[in-house]
Each structure stands twice: as structure tokens, then as C-alpha cells.
Image 1 (tube, rainbow, N blue to C red):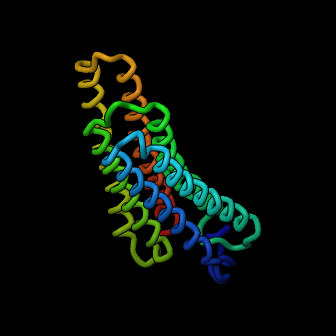
Image 2 (cartoon, rainbow, N blue to C red):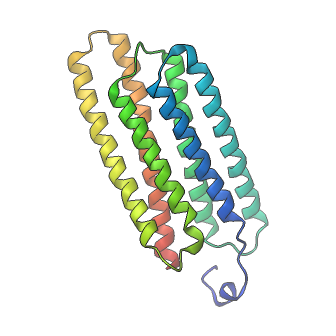
Image 3 (spheres, helix red, strand yellow):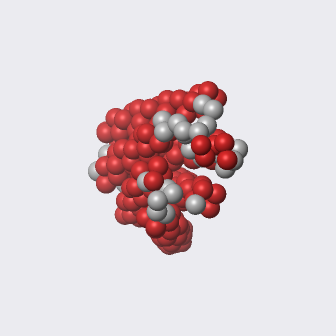
Length: 215
């Protein structure tokens, strides 16, 4: 076990921190592209934005596979293997969900993007920033947890904010949208965007679990 006397005397491989950081940075890049996509929505550029975000998803998959390989060949890890694997999977899920959002927009081809969609993509971007900052401090976890706890709490607050934006919009959508096809398209896109914030919050929950175990 990593908490054993032997593990405290044995150097732990630091290679996992830059790998996790790389995954967080990819999620940040994907969220930035998503922000641009929705803020300047046009079907003419949708395919291009989707391909750019898809590139980030593939890059995230490579990091995820590398972490899996390293876990299978590394004797002493900085945290439990299960925690590293869970964190890597969820970081990958954030980028995957952003890519799913872009794909739905491309396929559904809505007439326009509602202002609430822009708000949700902005929230996703703020979530990605929090994740990036939290992951950046994991290698100094034993020195201080104050900032990491703050970032995890912010992720929780952002998810609640996204819920409110989504729920308020859906109520308005069913009251005002008369085109049933556009209603369906917009509802599905907004659902995907909101779910991206749920996954981002779950990253924070995994990090909080690591804090409890190792501090």
C-alpha cells in the first residue's frame, strides 16, 4: 500500500503529474474551442470546429492510454492506482463530452444558438480552468490543500450555476418555441452542454477523495 512504512521510504514516480496536467490542459483547449464555436456559431464553420475539438479528444485519449500503461509498469505511485485511473478517466470524459457537444451541434444544425448556450460554454470554460489549477497543485498536496479545496468548491458552484441556466432555459423553450424540430435540437444540445459541467464537478469529487486519503 502507498500508506505503508515501505512506501514512505521509497521514491514515488513523479511522471503521473505531468501526464494528468497534460489531460487538464487538453480539456482547457477543447473548452476554449467550444466557446469560440458557440459564440460565433455558423453551420459553415461547424465542421471545422468539430474537427479541431476532435483532435483534442484524440490527444486526450493518448494521454489516458499512457497513464494506463504507466500504472501497469510502475511499482510505487504517488496516489492509489485506482485514484489515478479514476482521475484520468474523468479528465478524459470532460474532453469527450465537449466533443460530443460539438458533434451534436454539427449534426443537428440549429438555426441559431441561444444565449443560454453561450452561458453554458462559458461555465464549461471556467470549470476547465479550475480543473487545470487543481491538477497543477496535486504534486504539492501534502504541503497545502487550501487552493485545491477552493477549486473543487468552485467546480461544485459552477455546476449549480449551470443547472440553473439549463433549467431556466428549458422552461422558456417549451413556453416560446413553436417549431418542434428546433425545440428538440436545442434541447439536446443544451442537455449535452449541461452534462459537461456535471462531469467537471465529478473531477473535483475525485480530487477531494485524494485529499482525504493523503493529507
